[in-house]
Length: 397
Image 1 (cartoon, one colour):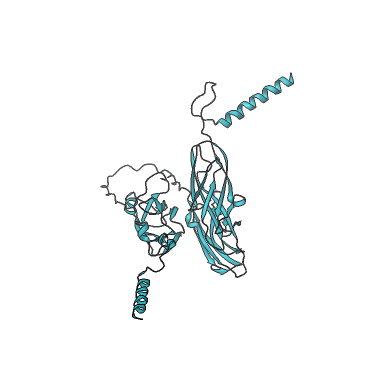
Image 2 (cartoon, one colour; image 1 turned 90 degrees about the vertical axis):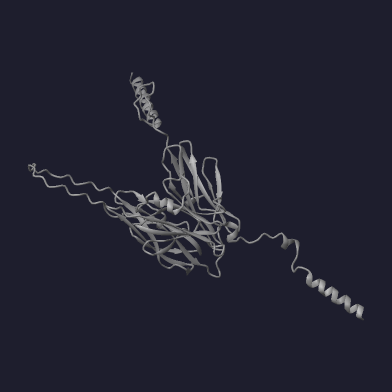
């Protein structure tokens, strides 16, 4: 009996000494992403019109002398600048103290600086706990230096003349798009959106709303109501037409609308819109910028893809793309989103756009004596007209 008891005690001790749950599956499992695995997180900036310039920090872009109305880009970099922050989004605290989310991605393009003072830009991860970074920049108010008054000297009075009224340049901008009612309601949800815009030469003529569910509407009203027939998270946007007939928009005129799911709702996902944000109708070579939006009522969109119409296709985790077109022409661009069930959706309707890249005008006098600064299209049209006149004369004879 003692020997049997000793054997049982030994086996029990060996069992306790074995590591719990030690299996091939556990030993090979990758650790969950942590802030330590992506550090350092770094908030970086650049002026929007300098897309080929290196990214810099807040102090450096402040020294460059930002002014109210300037546009900047922001990126949340991780892993020494090799990638963007996993699950990252961007918030900004304005000099007035107001804090708002300005991007649901780890990147922000074309943010318009609205006022003087100190800004805080916060890069934060929604998927990694306590993982973020904050950097600051300042927009300084221009200082006016008083000019010393000269000693008065008596001079003959000139003949009075009519002074020319200084010309004020036209300025217009889309300033903000807000959800003022119906957010976070259960589908079908009636959501009210309100746009704010300014024009120093007149009134805003039209508002074009993109609701983020593939539907859009143009109106002369700054406030509009839209019914969402499916749940999900939607990127709504507005373009405004100013008093001179120009369409304006920027990242401040986008906002997110959330609609809660009902218990009987089936899976719905789609590519909502494809926006051409810069570079369209430019001369070749031209770099064109795009933004893709979509929704999925049963999960998150996994990937975004663009077919640029020139034989090149790109995929990305982010919604924004850039493509350089070397040759003039007309290109059909198609956008797609990968939904939570691994299905690619899009490529038609509002997720298909046509862009135009123009040829450069002639700047050298040809041997034929044709006038300078005339496009190839104009030259070919002129030659066709000459040929037509010669044909008419021959027919008359």
